[in-house]
Length: 484
Ligand code: ADP
Ligand code: MG
Image (cartoon, rainbow, N blue to C red; front, side):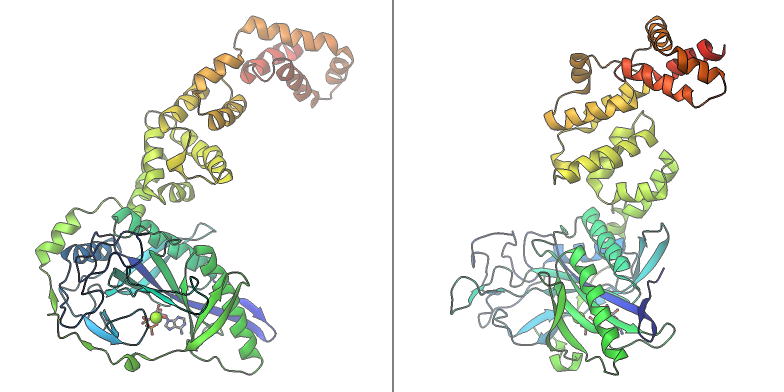
């Protein structure tokens, strides 16, 4: 499903490759023992290694290696038993070493693949080029003083995984689905918290345009986009900008750009360096990283069930539609909530209520499932009352609203408000007779052939019962009275 852009001179295809920087979930930095918690006072989590004092030597953090290998396995990628750390040389005021330790020609993880589901329900496989480990830089703080810039080195040396995709995406929607899926996998694995607002997951978007079937065009790279919505907006804007330039006879300059969320535009930051400008060379302070196949095998044996496998299981075990299953497995908490809700119940009813009522209510109140006022158990008891006929589905929606607002039990609300469904034949017969007695003219019309009036009679009975009459029973009794 590639969304072509229609320009003045015909159709254009957008080509997108993403580089995702994911902060590795570990207590300590990549090459030092300094802590990594978010939100600490500036410069309180900086060892002498992170501050690059002369003579300090990096020591690899084994936990980071473990997390990178687990991520590679989760992406179905090739794990390289030997990888090499290189120095990537450049100057930033918040990069005290004057270089970043990264991996270049021999990354720890090679090619892999990620399956994404698109809006029309189809699936597409996006290639992963590589995953390598590298250090993060510090932060320059420009807004604390009118004329000065402050440097916070807490982030200096924090371990990042850079996950580079192949240029396989063809629309902003595909790129959005890819980032969402990647975040989901990382969170399942517990290798990155995926928090884009705090910057633990950042995305560089490489965008080019071409005529369908032609060679790849020149790309621009939009740096550090920090939400999925912005990724999509930046790509859409950038693709149109490039189409306009090319159609007017211009050429795309390979450059690094920034996305401005307030204006919804990208703007030039600097012309793009080529790899040779960084003068990469193997870091002489670090030996090549060698890991054993047995280490990899042990991690592989211990991976959690990942979203794709869980989705397939949900489709088979619970009979869910693939698209519903996809939404439910996106995060682990939702999947767990669903499984305890569906346990021993009508699994499709459970999925409908979870994706429908509960998700809508959470969205509206800007909450996540973690702060849901309704537990899986309490929600389940509401569904039980529908299944056993205590209340109708219609009434259950009102009960749900009340549960969500007050956090009270379904049973208590139903009892207090007298919402139990009336399934007592005598009581319903009385309502049916009442309605018929009030409408002799309508009965005549009905008998004269106006079949549609049947619905009117049913509606009147339901109204009289304040929605509580068992609809199946009302139907049955009304039929007997009118047609029997
Ligand atoms: P660099 O560090 O120079 O950005 P990388 O190899 O790390 O290079 O990343 C290149 C990224 O750009 C990859 O995600 C790749 O898929 C993507 N890419 C390469 N060529 C194109 C192109 N013509 N159009 C869009 N994306 C591209
Ligand atoms: Mg790049």
